[in-house]
Picture 1 (spheres, rainbow, N blue to C red):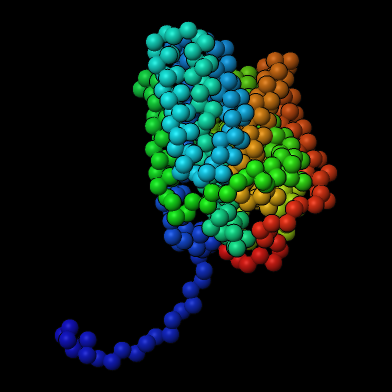
Picture 2 (picture 1 turned 90 degrees about the vertical axis):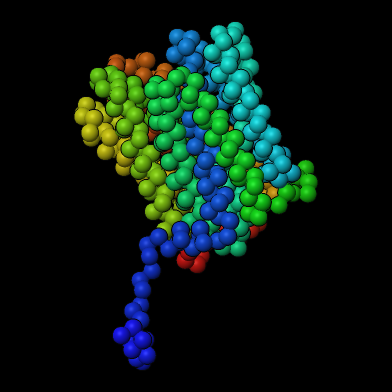
Length: 430
């Protein structure tokens, strides 16, 4: 019977036209050779970014019994990274990711593990600050991943937009899962577990990323002959926008924790902030499904306008005292975060000299960290000045979003230097 059927002539049926998949832009993105490997390694290396500070905070507070000491040590680590990070990134651009990122990560991991030993061994407090400062060489793994995409997709603006969208969603996911994993490890295993696991993941991820040489951007011959990103027209105002956006993030976190605590539901703060990050992550992925419309600066202004408008609903819902309404408002407000960051990174890519791209992206991260620190301090100070559970402190992230929009709008006509083709309205569909 099988031979009979095989011998029969087969009449070809007309093929039905297949409708393109909604996820086709991402499928085409990761169909490129080497992209899946470096993305997986980059995600492994990036997850600790959301773990290290929380892990150190919980470890020191639990063993030393002082949140003041824990906060000061973690603040030292952030400040040191903000100062050293751009220099590390400059070396990465000049000598290549593999040659610089591996020893820089090894030094940072040594600092983290030394911190664990000093905390466990009841060493003097000054040793904790010294160990925290040693972690300043932690490379910007997210920036290195974006630099690889920029190199691979230098002639495909629409695909670059999809890659920017994916990377922003990955950032949101890592900063959503990182603190949760750190808290779980430090509270259910032992206080040092979070820092130890984070350091191990960081070193493993960077080592794996360094082995992906075929997707690594070529090292610049001599970046000293290229204008510094800080002196590139249009980039300092963009960094100011990133700083103001960081104030939104930092103040929103502190104010939400204080608000829920004032209403006797502090445990709900994590879930509410997770909803805000989830909204941003979903919006980032959706943003990458469509080709970019308009130039990056116009998209940035539009996204910041949406973020400022949606954030105004947060203090209004907080005034009702109903946590479910506030959670819904945070979820919706978060949906404007990723589009703003995606447009900002696209604009930064267009304005930064290609041979110093990683340095430019690290400056953006430094600006964000500076804003987050300032937002945390401002939000905390505002909380202390008002009654517990008041909705007033939510005015801080609203004002910061308005400031970011004002700076972006005021510099809309500032010319950008010519470089690789930027996204335009006529960009081909990805």
